[in-house]
Amino acid sequence: MADELTWMPAWRIRELIGSREVSCVEVTEHFLARIEKFDPTLHAFAEVDPEGALAQAARADRAVSAGDSLGPLHGIPTSVKSHIRVEGLHHTQFGASTVSPFDDISVERLRGAGAVVVGTNTMMGAGSTAGGDPDNPGVFRPFNWDVEALNPWDTTRVPGWSSSGGAAAAVARLVPFTIGSDGGGSTRLPAAYSGIVGLHTTRGLVPHVDYEKPTMMLTASYGPLARDVRDVAIVTRAIGGPDGRDYVCIQDDTPDCVAPLDRGVEGMRLAWTDDYGFASRYAGAESDRVIALVRDAAYGLSSLGAGVEATDETWEDRGEHGTVRWTVEPSAYEAMVGTNLTPLQAVDPDLYREQAESRARNWEKFRRLFREHDVIMSATSQLVAKKIPEWDAAWTTDGPSYPGGSFAPAYCSHTMMFNWLGFPAVSVPCGFVDGLPVGLQIAAWPGREDVVLRVAGAFQEAFPRPERPPVS
Image (cartoon, rainbow, N blue to C red; front, side, top):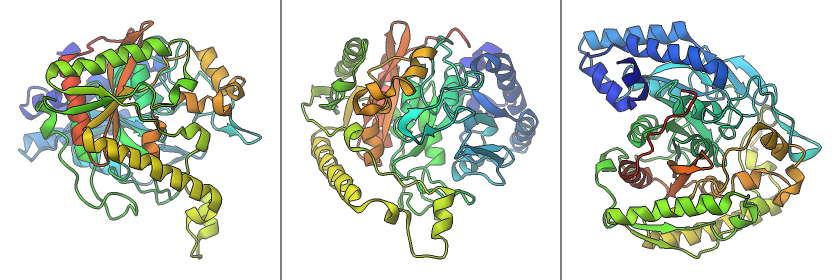
């Protein structure tokens, strides 16, 4: 049973818990043992709370014994990115780490669905290596590989930027699923580099609140990382939906993203793009092979009855134009207290106008495309996971040599568009190049997680990638 639990999807473990074939404590002990065994190598966890996790699991078992109504994640161990608030655990933000006195809304909802929160995951570049160089925008200080997460497929390589620990933990099954965040691809790109499913949710689908360091997320999202599309859908349904504490979250419920998973893609209209009309300028040596493999995988959906056709539309490169984000740092927030100012009033008006108009042009192009197609597909990344010295150099000494003066636009070339516009997009594993995972990205109109996950689910069922990384 132990090996079965390791690789069993979360929804199936939940069924075993509900039928009393396995206890919540047994499941939690199993995954805590995996963390203890593999995390010293992978550095996927910033903090683990075994005592608290076992106490949660014991309460979950009492609910089973009492015949209580059980949530969809009842007894399933999970973890969240370390900048997401978990009461009693350390919270990392703006280079500081403090113990949080409250849960983020997403964590509240995980608990409400019955999940057992075992700890927090490391974030690439957010530990002792944190931050950019103020004298050289876009150039980062070297990483500290004693604390940064490593790729379970090859520990000489990275698992992606930002939601790195969560991706490593999910693919190596240190827990059945994790929660990451995505500000430019930071859930999808680690998912692609690590060989799992990662979802960037519609802007505001997953509400957020931080009473100590207020932020409003206009271009970032929270979303699940897991090996199984159905797990991702169940978690998304559990943590998504309106909340009055979040000023900018969605106001209405969106379509159920679990129910359509078994409908297949017959009759659906799917668009494909190699590079959105601009991303080839950021190509690496492996990019032609990556895109060819992912293109073949995407067109494989035609064998399931979908119509797949290429689009020659050209969108605008966010690496050239940048992206206005709304993140209220403490100093800026303090300066606004007692005034009528909002964070956007601190943005240069000319820059904001240029970006707003550019966003409108690209939004309109997608609106036209989605009148004729259900989704648009591409490679999630045209690159594969770099070795550690190459990754360090890309973000530091070699950064100015990349188009745009930083590695960031190259890394995010296929993903940033959907943060900018707030559209949902999922990465699903579709094969390997040079022995390293690559991902198929599927994006749709806002609020249509049901559509992107329906396509991803059909793809995963027809073309499964059951491979397990060496460190697992």
